[in-house]
Every structure is written in structure tokens, then in C-alpha cells.
Length: 195
Image (tube, rainbow, N blue to C red; front, side):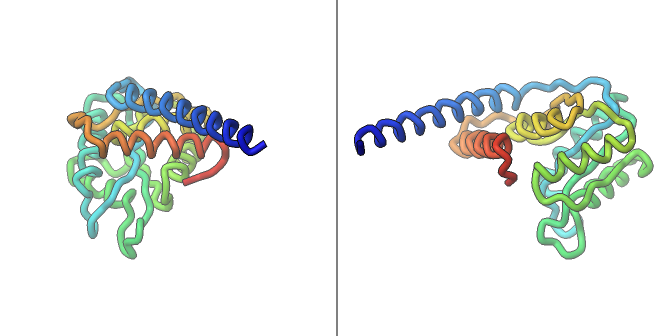
């Protein structure tokens, strides 16, 4: 009986490992594809801010979204992200302020400033879009993040075009860890666990 249980556990673990590797491959493939095209809105997923200033990662996302906006691909931008432990600033507000300083009209920017995870950011942004009858978005984030966030937005009935911020793929262990982490997050989301 123990041997049968051990074999069943081993097969189950192998199956989960195979599934995660397939998801990782899809994440990797999506991470370098820029699908940017005309849409109702550009949706920027938040990242860290430092006392009212965007982190280098967030600034790169914002600059990429600004370029897409200036190309005329969407008339509006949604910035996302809550406080993340900062008692004064939120990622969404810092993003808006940065874009305004770069010349973007403030009336073109919608701010979601309460979320604390990808799941919450995508849900809140999708709700904002639903209320405004916006049906499509260009999703801007880091490459490794696009696949999971895109699936979450599509689940809510939106047409989503991924557009990762420009970066040089490194092929490092850290990058592989990010793909694995995103694949685990995606599988957990599929079964109803939000992280």
C-alpha cells in the first residue's frame, strides 16, 4: 500500500512539474512579444515607488506606456497600484504624477490606487473599464508578468494586447525564478487562490 501511495505521489508531482514547465514556456514566449495595437486604454501595472518617485522598473513601464500613448494607440491610460507600505504615496498616484510631468494631460489618466497584488490590480482596472464601457487594453508591465495578468484580464471579458517594457533578456537564474514564480501564481489563481 505504501509503495502504491509513493508511486501515486511521485506521478502527481511529475504531472504538476510538467504542467508548470508548460506554463513557464508560455510565459517566456509571451514575455518578448509586443502586441501593441489600437485599444481603448493603456493599462500600466504598478511597481515600487520611492517616496513619491517611481522606481527604475516603474519608470521604464511608464516611459513605455507614454511612447504607446504618443503613437496614438489609446486615448486613455490607467495606472495601478496601492501604497505598498508607504503611508503617503501610492504607486498609481506616483505614476499619474510622473506622466503629467512628462506632458500627458491629467484628464487622460485614470488612477487605481488601492490594489496590493496583480489579482487586485487587474480586477479593479477591469471594473473601471467596465463602468466606462472600455473593452480593450494594451497591458504594460515587465515581460515575465504579462502572461498571468493578461489571462486575468481576459477572464473578465477584455481584449488584451501585451506590451512588455523594453528590456534585455538575461537568461539568468533570477529570470528563470521569475518565470517559475509567475507560473505558480497563475496555477494558484486558476484554482481560486489569490496571491
